[in-house]
Image (cartoon, rainbow, N blue to C red; front, side, top):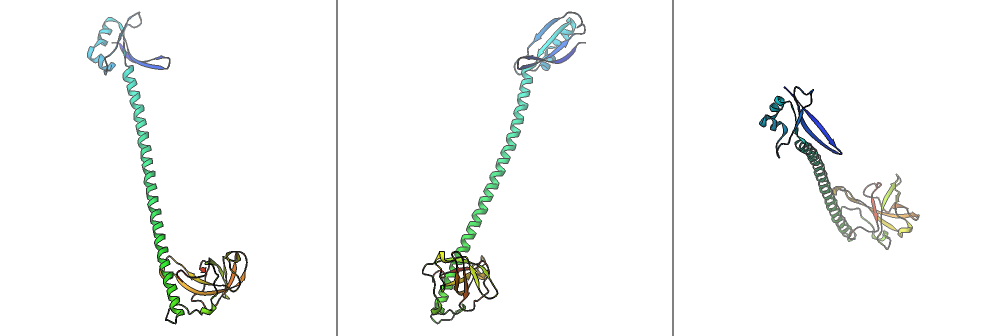
Length: 241
Protein backbone atom coordinates (compact mmCIF):
# COMPACT_ATOMS: atom_id res chain seq x y z
CA UNK A 1 0.00 0.00 0.00
CA UNK A 2 1.27 3.43 -0.89
CA UNK A 3 1.80 6.38 1.49
CA UNK A 4 0.07 9.78 1.42
CA UNK A 5 1.75 12.93 2.66
CA UNK A 6 0.99 16.66 2.61
CA UNK A 7 3.54 18.76 0.72
CA UNK A 8 4.05 22.49 0.30
CA UNK A 9 4.88 24.15 -3.03
CA UNK A 10 6.29 27.71 -2.99
CA UNK A 11 6.22 29.96 -6.07
CA UNK A 12 7.58 33.40 -5.18
CA UNK A 13 5.45 34.70 -2.32
CA UNK A 14 2.69 32.19 -3.02
CA UNK A 15 2.26 28.96 -1.09
CA UNK A 16 0.30 26.01 -2.38
CA UNK A 17 -0.39 22.63 -0.80
CA UNK A 18 -1.08 19.18 -2.15
CA UNK A 19 -1.51 15.56 -1.13
CA UNK A 20 1.14 13.35 -2.65
CA UNK A 21 0.40 9.61 -2.90
CA UNK A 22 3.51 7.48 -3.41
CA UNK A 23 3.08 3.85 -4.60
CA UNK A 24 4.78 0.97 -2.88
CA UNK A 25 7.33 0.64 -5.72
CA UNK A 26 8.26 4.34 -5.67
CA UNK A 27 11.97 3.45 -5.87
CA UNK A 28 11.69 2.97 -9.61
CA UNK A 29 10.59 5.61 -12.16
CA UNK A 30 6.80 6.13 -11.95
CA UNK A 31 4.13 7.98 -13.88
CA UNK A 32 2.67 11.14 -12.27
CA UNK A 33 -1.09 11.78 -12.17
CA UNK A 34 -2.19 15.27 -11.13
CA UNK A 35 -5.80 15.61 -10.05
CA UNK A 36 -7.68 18.84 -9.29
CA UNK A 37 -10.88 18.67 -7.25
CA UNK A 38 -13.91 20.77 -8.04
CA UNK A 39 -14.88 24.06 -6.40
CA UNK A 40 -15.87 23.56 -2.79
CA UNK A 41 -14.32 20.10 -2.60
CA UNK A 42 -11.28 18.86 -0.76
CA UNK A 43 -8.44 16.53 -1.69
CA UNK A 44 -9.34 14.00 1.01
CA UNK A 45 -12.99 13.93 -0.04
CA UNK A 46 -11.98 13.45 -3.69
CA UNK A 47 -9.74 10.49 -2.88
CA UNK A 48 -12.53 8.88 -0.86
CA UNK A 49 -15.08 9.37 -3.64
CA UNK A 50 -12.93 8.38 -6.63
CA UNK A 51 -10.66 5.80 -4.93
CA UNK A 52 -7.91 7.00 -7.29
CA UNK A 53 -5.41 6.32 -4.53
CA UNK A 54 -6.13 2.59 -4.85
CA UNK A 55 -5.89 2.82 -8.63
CA UNK A 56 -2.53 4.63 -8.33
CA UNK A 57 -1.22 1.96 -5.98
CA UNK A 58 -2.18 -0.81 -8.37
CA UNK A 59 -0.58 0.92 -11.39
CA UNK A 60 2.49 2.26 -9.52
CA UNK A 61 1.45 5.86 -10.29
CA UNK A 62 2.42 8.87 -8.22
CA UNK A 63 -0.80 10.76 -7.46
CA UNK A 64 -0.86 14.46 -6.60
CA UNK A 65 -4.09 16.10 -5.46
CA UNK A 66 -4.18 19.88 -4.98
CA UNK A 67 -5.49 21.22 -1.67
CA UNK A 68 -4.28 24.79 -2.03
CA UNK A 69 -7.64 26.54 -2.22
CA UNK A 70 -9.05 24.70 0.76
CA UNK A 71 -5.98 25.44 2.88
CA UNK A 72 -5.93 29.04 1.83
CA UNK A 73 -9.59 29.45 2.76
CA UNK A 74 -8.88 27.92 6.14
CA UNK A 75 -6.02 30.35 6.71
CA UNK A 76 -8.17 33.28 5.63
CA UNK A 77 -10.99 32.15 7.90
CA UNK A 78 -8.58 31.86 10.82
CA UNK A 79 -7.20 35.35 10.14
CA UNK A 80 -10.70 36.79 9.84
CA UNK A 81 -11.68 35.10 13.11
CA UNK A 82 -8.75 36.77 14.90
CA UNK A 83 -9.64 40.13 13.38
CA UNK A 84 -13.25 39.77 14.52
CA UNK A 85 -12.18 38.81 18.04
CA UNK A 86 -9.93 41.87 18.25
CA UNK A 87 -12.75 44.08 16.94
CA UNK A 88 -15.17 42.71 19.54
CA UNK A 89 -12.68 43.48 22.33
CA UNK A 90 -12.10 46.97 20.94
CA UNK A 91 -15.85 47.65 20.72
CA UNK A 92 -16.31 46.55 24.33
CA UNK A 93 -13.54 48.90 25.45
CA UNK A 94 -15.08 51.81 23.52
CA UNK A 95 -18.52 51.06 25.00
CA UNK A 96 -17.03 51.00 28.52
CA UNK A 97 -15.33 54.36 27.96
CA UNK A 98 -18.58 55.86 26.65
CA UNK A 99 -20.47 54.58 29.69
CA UNK A 100 -17.83 56.03 32.02
CA UNK A 101 -17.97 59.37 30.17
CA UNK A 102 -21.77 59.50 30.40
CA UNK A 103 -21.65 58.68 34.12
CA UNK A 104 -19.08 61.44 34.72
CA UNK A 105 -21.19 63.97 32.80
CA UNK A 106 -24.25 63.05 34.87
CA UNK A 107 -22.27 63.43 38.12
CA UNK A 108 -20.99 66.83 37.02
CA UNK A 109 -24.50 68.00 36.15
CA UNK A 110 -25.79 66.84 39.53
CA UNK A 111 -22.93 68.62 41.33
CA UNK A 112 -23.52 71.82 39.33
CA UNK A 113 -27.25 71.75 40.05
CA UNK A 114 -26.61 71.14 43.76
CA UNK A 115 -24.15 74.06 43.87
CA UNK A 116 -26.63 76.32 42.10
CA UNK A 117 -29.46 75.34 44.46
CA UNK A 118 -27.24 75.94 47.50
CA UNK A 119 -26.24 79.40 46.25
CA UNK A 120 -29.85 80.34 45.55
CA UNK A 121 -30.86 79.23 49.05
CA UNK A 122 -28.01 81.22 50.62
CA UNK A 123 -28.95 84.33 48.64
CA UNK A 124 -32.51 84.08 49.91
CA UNK A 125 -31.23 83.70 53.46
CA UNK A 126 -28.98 86.74 53.15
CA UNK A 127 -31.88 88.82 51.83
CA UNK A 128 -33.90 87.75 54.86
CA UNK A 129 -31.01 88.76 57.09
CA UNK A 130 -30.89 92.17 55.41
CA UNK A 131 -34.62 92.66 55.97
CA UNK A 132 -34.15 91.62 59.59
CA UNK A 133 -31.44 94.26 59.94
CA UNK A 134 -33.79 96.90 58.53
CA UNK A 135 -36.42 95.92 61.09
CA UNK A 136 -33.76 96.25 63.80
CA UNK A 137 -32.84 99.73 62.63
CA UNK A 138 -36.53 100.70 62.74
CA UNK A 139 -36.85 99.49 66.34
CA UNK A 140 -38.54 96.17 65.61
CA UNK A 141 -37.57 92.93 67.36
CA UNK A 142 -34.86 90.80 65.75
CA UNK A 143 -32.63 87.84 66.50
CA UNK A 144 -29.67 89.76 65.03
CA UNK A 145 -27.28 91.79 67.12
CA UNK A 146 -28.43 95.43 67.40
CA UNK A 147 -26.32 97.68 65.15
CA UNK A 148 -26.06 101.40 65.67
CA UNK A 149 -26.78 103.11 62.38
CA UNK A 150 -24.60 106.08 63.24
CA UNK A 151 -21.57 103.77 63.58
CA UNK A 152 -21.82 102.56 59.98
CA UNK A 153 -19.35 103.99 57.45
CA UNK A 154 -19.29 101.52 54.50
CA UNK A 155 -17.15 102.16 51.41
CA UNK A 156 -19.04 103.90 48.61
CA UNK A 157 -18.53 100.90 46.30
CA UNK A 158 -19.82 97.43 47.02
CA UNK A 159 -16.71 95.38 47.80
CA UNK A 160 -16.31 91.89 49.21
CA UNK A 161 -13.48 89.91 50.78
CA UNK A 162 -12.71 87.12 53.22
CA UNK A 163 -11.40 86.80 56.77
CA UNK A 164 -7.84 85.50 56.65
CA UNK A 165 -6.94 85.47 60.35
CA UNK A 166 -8.86 86.18 63.57
CA UNK A 167 -6.87 86.54 66.80
CA UNK A 168 -7.91 86.20 70.43
CA UNK A 169 -8.09 89.99 70.93
CA UNK A 170 -10.90 90.24 68.38
CA UNK A 171 -8.84 91.79 65.58
CA UNK A 172 -9.26 90.23 62.14
CA UNK A 173 -7.13 90.39 59.02
CA UNK A 174 -9.08 90.50 55.74
CA UNK A 175 -8.13 89.82 52.12
CA UNK A 176 -8.90 93.28 50.67
CA UNK A 177 -7.17 96.63 51.15
CA UNK A 178 -6.70 100.08 49.68
CA UNK A 179 -6.57 98.70 46.13
CA UNK A 180 -10.24 97.72 46.62
CA UNK A 181 -11.12 101.21 47.94
CA UNK A 182 -10.79 100.63 51.70
CA UNK A 183 -9.53 103.37 54.02
CA UNK A 184 -9.20 103.67 57.78
CA UNK A 185 -12.57 104.18 59.41
CA UNK A 186 -14.61 102.28 56.84
CA UNK A 187 -16.96 99.62 58.19
CA UNK A 188 -17.74 96.22 56.75
CA UNK A 189 -20.35 93.59 57.49
CA UNK A 190 -19.11 90.14 58.55
CA UNK A 191 -21.14 87.02 57.79
CA UNK A 192 -20.68 83.28 57.40
CA UNK A 193 -21.94 81.18 54.48
CA UNK A 194 -22.35 77.41 54.75
CA UNK A 195 -23.77 74.69 52.51
CA UNK A 196 -25.93 73.86 55.55
CA UNK A 197 -28.46 76.68 55.59
CA UNK A 198 -28.89 76.70 59.38
CA UNK A 199 -25.15 77.29 59.84
CA UNK A 200 -25.07 80.48 57.73
CA UNK A 201 -25.20 83.57 59.96
CA UNK A 202 -24.63 87.31 60.23
CA UNK A 203 -21.83 88.12 62.70
CA UNK A 204 -21.82 91.91 62.93
CA UNK A 205 -19.91 95.04 61.89
CA UNK A 206 -16.16 95.72 61.95
CA UNK A 207 -14.21 98.95 61.49
CA UNK A 208 -10.97 99.21 59.49
CA UNK A 209 -7.95 100.15 61.63
CA UNK A 210 -4.99 99.56 59.31
CA UNK A 211 -4.82 99.28 55.52
CA UNK A 212 -2.26 97.99 53.01
CA UNK A 213 -2.85 97.65 49.25
CA UNK A 214 -4.00 94.02 49.53
CA UNK A 215 -4.96 93.51 53.18
CA UNK A 216 -6.54 95.31 56.12
CA UNK A 217 -6.95 94.91 59.87
CA UNK A 218 -10.38 95.47 61.39
CA UNK A 219 -11.96 95.52 64.86
CA UNK A 220 -15.57 94.78 65.81
CA UNK A 221 -17.68 97.88 66.34
CA UNK A 222 -19.72 95.92 68.91
CA UNK A 223 -19.43 92.35 70.15
CA UNK A 224 -20.03 89.95 67.29
CA UNK A 225 -22.68 87.23 67.44
CA UNK A 226 -19.95 84.60 67.02
CA UNK A 227 -16.18 84.46 66.90
CA UNK A 228 -15.03 85.05 63.29
CA UNK A 229 -12.96 82.35 61.64
CA UNK A 230 -10.83 82.14 58.50
CA UNK A 231 -13.11 81.86 55.49
CA UNK A 232 -15.90 84.09 56.83
CA UNK A 233 -17.02 86.80 54.39
CA UNK A 234 -16.80 90.58 54.65
CA UNK A 235 -18.71 93.05 52.47
CA UNK A 236 -19.65 96.70 52.41
CA UNK A 237 -23.29 95.64 52.62
CA UNK A 238 -25.41 92.49 52.87
CA UNK A 239 -27.37 91.40 49.77
CA UNK A 240 -30.56 93.37 49.53
CA UNK A 241 -29.56 95.98 52.15
